[in-house]
Image (cartoon, rainbow, N blue to C red):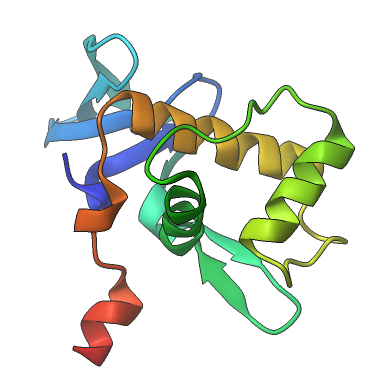
Length: 138
């Protein structure tokens, strides 16, 4: 499973891996139950590698945030996204201390933690993935 093939689909829970393209959209496989189905071109799709979190200085790629969580949790699942908003914000402050608290809402933090935990449950290893910024420096 490659990080650059993981997507989120608006209106559908969970994460999906892109398997192939068809004439009308893409064929995906759910990371939670392994079911395959088509996503039509009318759906809003977001590649996780294109998502970033606002900070006071710049934006941080979601992959870098995931790597920080994986480092903190030693590759295990993070706290539950169902915790109180105060706990979620405090936890996220440990992961990304300078995140923009006016533009990153608790609902965003919940989504990031849900996605991270879904990837961990599906066996994703963040230590083997290089972020684009690391590839540029190499």
